[in-house]
Length: 438
Image (cartoon, rainbow, N blue to C red; front, side, top):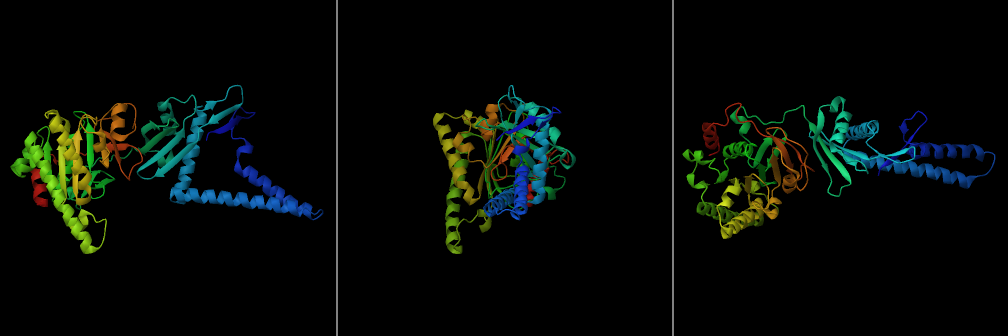
């Protein structure tokens, strides 16, 4: 709810005294104390009981609300940081008059501000949208200027209006820290089974969040992201199957089983059939393990099953070569793998230029736990990828946005891995990674 401020004699907008809790609390407490003094002369016991009851009720209510806020924040320190940030943002909105001015009155309505702190990952700021507030860029500047001191490195990386049109939501990240993952030795690409590192501070466990989608225009470094993932899959000994829409992975045939790298239509369907057969076989294995251990909800990683990952690059190029019947079968098979594979250690990592319904139907897009959109994209493309708009304007090279179920509430900034700095883009490196995991 917006708060009404009033202009004082110095032409400064202040929160009226009658709108402040502590003023009312102090007033009731003062009256209660005075009633004790008056009670020495005149019997006013009922009034005393009422006043002291009000003091108790107000104190308990405030303590309850404060305790709830601290618990929600996580720690007292986080709570203090949130409240300080909320005051700073509100002060900036007042200073720049990003408010709703009430005509012919000395009052203005100041939007409510809520701050959520998830350090060191990110900060979220939610600002109520009042009549006359249209400029997201101006709000972004106001919010950026509000964070100083220990939070001075945080700046808005994502700005959006909620689907109901009632709030602006901003995500601030530490832009002073480069989160690009740069492997320098083979130890850097070794991870525990099923765990994939995408950038500094972002690891995805495929046994929990099985499927990853990567979208972006030509030149946005989608393939670089895939190569970074493949290096880790090879080193952990995963069974990687390739649907190669632009012949990026054909060079692996010198050391990797060539039947697992396909690009023509018939071999593609053969690959999908093989994976569906693996899923069916693993479902029986998992059912037997549940009976053996008398424990439901087992993960493939817990019973020692090797990760099986289908890497599908440029799905749109494959689908474009299919007739209507073939494309329907392709979508049906891929959907079956995505829906049934997660529980048995089978993952899909798919990339395409555009998350449009022509390439990946909505029912498939919803199944990807981790979604990455690289480069600049219009609002329609962002909505297709994330269900909401991440930001307006251009995105710098080697950057994008991502969401990850259970880890993010709205799109956060993504940093494309750097495989080139230390030569990890060379074919020999992929061969050695495969030998490590073999």
